[in-house]
Amino acid sequence: MSATLKIGPVTMAAPLVMAPLAGYTDRVFRLLAREAGAALTCTEMISAQGLIYNNKNTLALLDLEGEPGPVAVQLFGREPEVMARATEMAVAAGAAIIDLNMGCPTPKIVKNGEGSALMRDLPLAAAIVAAMVRAAGPVPVTVKMRLGWDEVSINVVDATRVVVDAGAAAVAIHGRTRSQFYSGRADWSYFPRVKEAVPVPVIGNGDVRSAADAVTLLEQAGCDGVMVGRGAIGNPWLLTAIRAVMEGRPEPPPVDIKTRLSMACRHLNLLVQYKGEVAAVKEMRKHLAYYLRGLRGAARLRQEINTLTTAAAVTATLEDFQRNYPE
Ligand SMILES: Cc1cc2nc3c(=O)[nH]c(=O)nc-3n(C[C@H](O)[C@H](O)[C@H](O)COP(=O)(O)O)c2cc1C
Image 1 (tube, protein in one colour):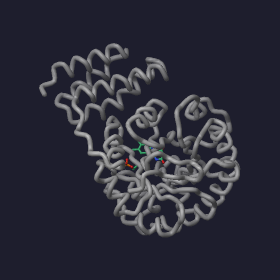
Image 2 (cartoon, rainbow, N blue to C red):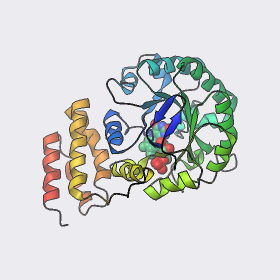
Image 3 (cartoon, rainbow, N blue to C red):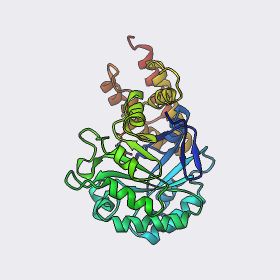
């Protein structure tokens, strides 16, 4: 199994990447993912247009100040010139890698010709990548895409060739079509063909839920790297397990409830520091749904926590739940 992942001049300590997840992979999530074992983390998708118009909320997503890297900044957009200017801003912000979003299936995005709509306009995708590569200087540009628009127009091999010819230094492939959104099982059977078609690293993504899945992607699907998405929400230990197996160590046993809840409390405290208490308590609710998944009484606990407005109250409620949990 490959020990590192090299994208252009950037070498990751392991071929393990935390996926971009809008609404989740903020600075705090990235910190916890990195601690857990991810060797590369990503911002969520950031509007290139929003950046160049200095939109305050968009600029906040680009805040990498002091963050231990490497961090990839993912941009979405459709105009090469706008993407180039946004790329310059991302480089100035400290991005180790700039990624082009060619996978987002959301109607709002696709209607603008952005995200996965670019899978249907490969000449434009090539022009965007070329413009980003010129703007990025020594910083590598990568592309995250899907298998194609729908099952009758799967073009991931062509699309990969096109973006690599335009200068992309790696591709990450989510093994679904746009029309599948996030449902059905990810299909990894195209990955070996993609790998054969291009000389750059191919990172496999979609439904990685265990260390065994990661091994399959690397050893059978021919991928150079593994990208983990939803499986790591509220469960950074998935990254730890994958990293262990990648390094030839035994897979750690599942964590107990105490470990889960103390991580949740730490996540909350970091969010408070980073975003302030009001935003942190509100945002933590969606993460908690995942930290608590599968625990007895989780639904009621979540209901209760959703009425709380201070971090101290959330922490006390979680601690109380843990003390009384029948293990
Ligand atoms: C809530 C959510 C937000 C996402 N946001 C992004 C995003 O900003 N950029 C992107 O390229 N993919 C995004 N994705 C897709 C994931 O990165 C990943 O490709 C997909 O979830 C499949 O991997 P998984 O099965 O491991 O989750 C998002 C997915 C989800 C569920």
